[in-house]
Length: 126
Image (cartoon, rainbow, N blue to C red; front, side):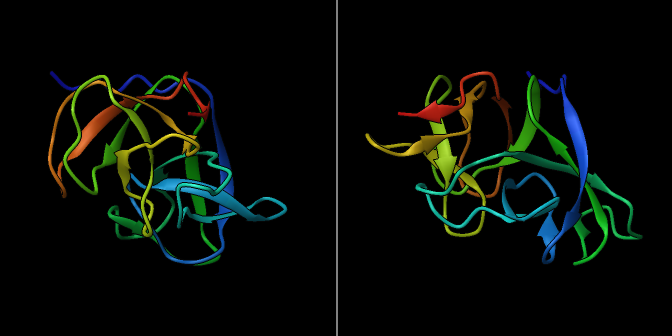
């Protein structure tokens, strides 16, 4: 079953090219980039942008950042439903280890490249 019921969202400026369904972090005031490590301060998940290509947002364009609720996220490895998720080196969701920052909890299982669902209400440090 697919879960996508976004809660709070904000529109920010992409500081670099951002793929859809990636975990984001701030890069500067009102500017976001894809997270690049499990230790990054994770903000939310990328949604739609205002560009011509719906699969990505180019640097300088606006991107919707989903902060809470349920959202789609691309998996970067094997994920089991119920696992706490963090970011890999290109902003995809992977299972978190102790001490990692967490973006949320997986609502469905999947493998690398799948677009799954994440509950963004459980953000913090695992």
